Picture 1: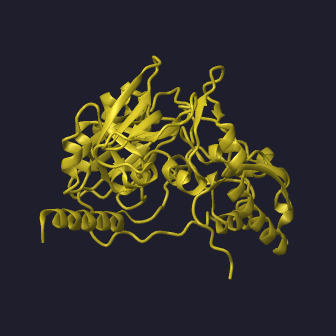
Picture 2 (picture 1 turned 180 degrees about the vertical axis):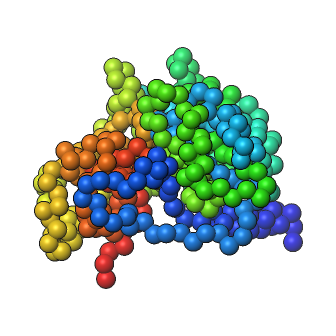
Length: 416
């Protein structure tokens, strides 16, 4: 067995082991659970499948904590003031704007038409982040230098790039900054982010907001995530816009990232096709989308129950099937009003995150008048179950609940 084959085998084994141990998605909404069950018409829990806990310990044991809209200043380092917390590392995450990419031979691969750019989901990490990555991949993170970056395997496949490539990003002062790709990592080891860089490099391309922290608990400690989140809540400032803390224990969530109930942008891109855009110069929270992408992927259609909606064409198909099933089951009257589906926005303090299914036309608001953001949700379980069956996760269980929100989360499982 040569060195290349041996390294490939080690990577495959490590990636498989990590994915197996990390498990599937199970969400703890700390603020919600400590406050009791939501009021309204919700009569049953979300239909998300309960994951099986890993059968053995995770090494290194990585716990996740995040706050809707971003971590307040000093929140991450202050985690170690809680007696059960042994070590922590705080990471930034934002959208950076790619203007060009070149492969290892210097050939241009990505070159969006000016003035449009490609939004890239980037995380900036401290040197201590490496201790939360399993071997043998840990060395790649430990050796990461300023001006260098690591692509997730999904991002590398999407970009058609690998080690030796160059990513050119727009900067706040109107210039560009180049990042050299030094390798790739499995998505699960990068929290589903497309690109991992040092925090300093992240700052150069506009990745500045602290979004999440990873931590380890004391040896032999086995705290309950909800109770631990309650111990973290006093670390929030009194004027926190979304005073909720989300905590995941090892194995509770597939991707160690902020807003882990949302599908990572790289997976939305793979499903709905990547777009180019730019922040609106008048309203930076609004995206000016490439009209060619809109022309190819966004359409208006009149659907049963919903009426006329503007969505991604793939979303329209799923919604049509969901509404048909709702009608067949005699539940069409569960929807009384309908909100927007395609909403191209990107706000740094959005509790859903800076790039979401809304931007792809892959989310819809149902019964928004009765389900205001942040208020206890009032949705019938039959509606939640039907939407889930056709691939839509529900926002009513978020730390900052959005009971009207149904966003694309997974491939549909049509009834037999």
